[in-house]
Picture 1: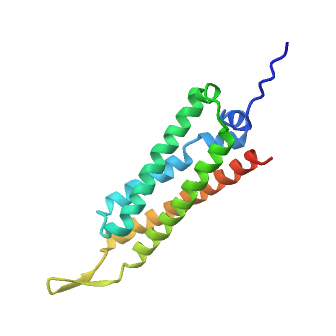
Picture 2 (picture 1 turned 90 degrees about the horizontal axis):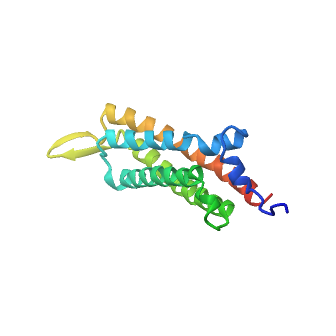
Picture 3 (picture 1 turned 135 degrees about the horizontal axis):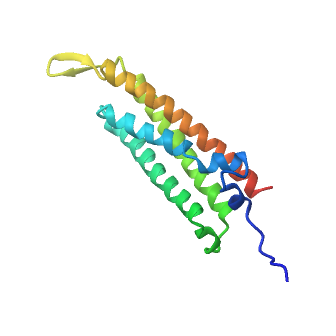
Length: 163
């Protein structure tokens, strides 16, 4: 008798050697760029904790959940857990895309405050020094690239979920 078990398109895409979509899903583009956002924001000494705290939360959380999601797929646990993995993949990428888009906007807003003058005990100085400004510009660019990567993964997940 033939087995009636059909492989999920997500499971087929999880093998990086089978197709380009699988390489995009599996390889660490989102994890690499998200990790760079995390490192760059942390290295700027977080001069605006209210704005950049959310950016740090999103980048760290998305980094670890993406790593966990990847480990679940590569370990083969998806074959043992009965769930609609295509929907879970779509839902995960949608949530992370929305959060990363907000984090990108907040990081861009924090970077735009470069020339804002603040009074520090009768010594007027800019909010961000030049080094912090340069680091925040790089963090903003990588936050946009990470958002775009999650957007592409969201589009691919939507295509797998609704063929």
